[in-house]
Image (tube, rainbow, N blue to C red; front, top):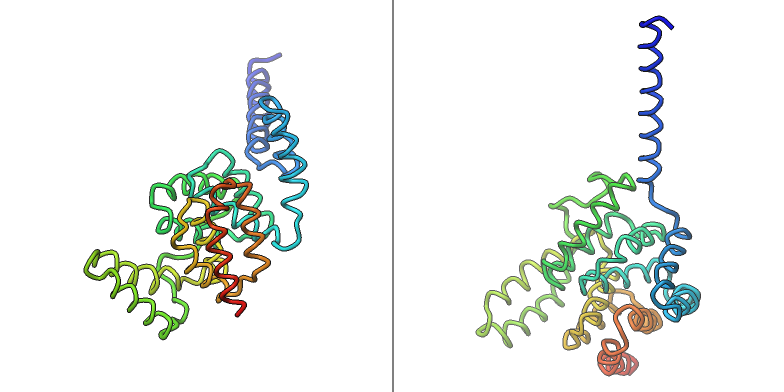
Length: 268
């Protein structure tokens, strides 16, 4: 073979090799299907605890996620809120993908993380930012699908906000004036009015995070707000069932008396 032909043949082989390598990398970068991811997760659990694998398969995925009083979309919101609030990152990519597959919009996930920076702390939100960035990139989700920093806010319920602000000012204005100021100006007159997450879903995120992190004192106020925003009693009850498995029985049982009191007062 002539030198020139040898060179052309070598270049052709190199190009074929590069193309095959790129195709392999792209294939590996594609997110796995839910079925494949679930099977991998179950295999990993089985290698450590066959009993836990059975509970995960039969009770978690085979039962809990199929219960009718809370939609798969809402279950994803509750679960992600719990994971972010508790800074539990190992399974977060799986549940972020599951949320997107079940109709939670990228813009809603973005707002959830922003919201929980305030309700669970900045340093619990930051790991979620890193993981969500990776998931978004793999799924081709860009900034054009995410809420802008500055948006037109939803209308403010002036009467309700005046009552809330007055109560907080009277109780804590002399104790922590900075907290009172930020609560009014940043949380209730800004964050809660961002349109990227519906008020009902924003409340669902808040209550889920509070219960998951054991913050029972604030559950009553925010559960009432959630139900005012459209969360039904059946949905609230099923949220507790979801959280029992994802945040643990003690956190849910600690919240049950508060939830019971809210339900009873609203029934009168």
